[in-house]
Picture (cartoon, rainbow, N blue to C red):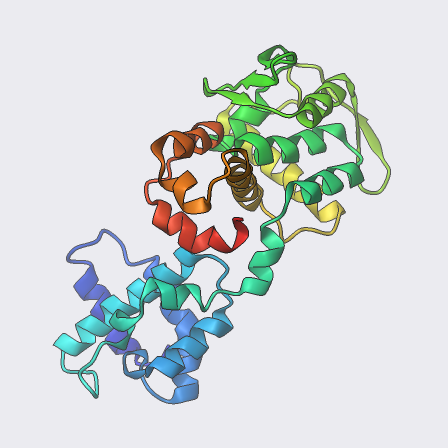
Length: 303
């Protein structure tokens, strides 16, 4: 690590106010190659050097780039107070969220925000109905803690006539005809097909997503099993870059666009209006505390 003794002093300074500096270490290690390349400490990087470094980091979320920039801002602020910065300025502190957003890897991000049509195309390509239900349920009503709203879902929870579903978490959400049909198929299927064609029997425990072997009835264990199953399903159709969270966000964006069309409105009105925003929050079990942040991050995907 470049100027390792200086970083160690900063860690000691931080330990006066935080319990651990463990999360900071990987961030400094990530920057170290650029310090060696520029032959100077990161606190002395100019704006161009910082932005070029961030581009090469290939951030895909605003949260991740903000976290790193905040850490480097704190470090450089400490260096300024210690008279270690050559020009006495903290360049990181001048970088705005808009500037950081412009540095995201939009190419990869574009692949991770997908339309409903894309989701439907993916699930048609999957062999197992339960995998289809996993993906479509996350898209339509969210991920939930440990995936419990999907893992513990039962056919009795679905009101087929009214296209609603009572989730394990207690919310009653709207569901599509496609999700109902997928749930019915998954509920009736008692066999799991693996990528290479081998099959295994599934146990009927009353849930829509049935398991091939007994797992401890613990939310974390069940959630980990679904996480692994979801990852395997996405990999089988060559979209391993996709995650449950990105499917969830894609669903939120789709619903926002549907509300814009329904009310002949625009993205700002839909997200700032308490009534329409609460519809999205209820459907996905989320809280959009800062509509401006949602718009800044996903505005390009809204109509």
